[in-house]
Image 1 (cartoon, rainbow, N blue to C red):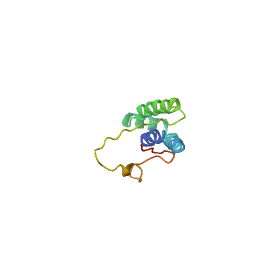
Image 2: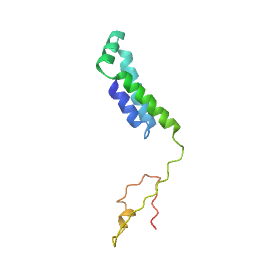
Image 3: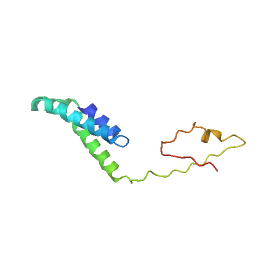
Image 4: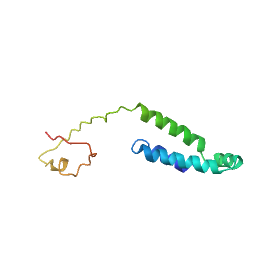
Length: 101
């Protein structure tokens, strides 16, 4: 259960549907346990702290701006080629772009 909650938290900012699926799987697993078994699992594994952490991450994601942040990078160089900035050696998100001046 805790592993699926942690997976949900990790995927939340980058793949919300996968996060939702992982959280649903945790709920399914919890629902299959008797109340005694669930309480025992909560004592052995940090289920409650994992849920609190997930809820905090979810609130952070919901507060995030709709637009991705703009990042400006200054690369200092001394007689070195900056080709690596534009020849796909610099990992950019699919919607990202690099402007080299």
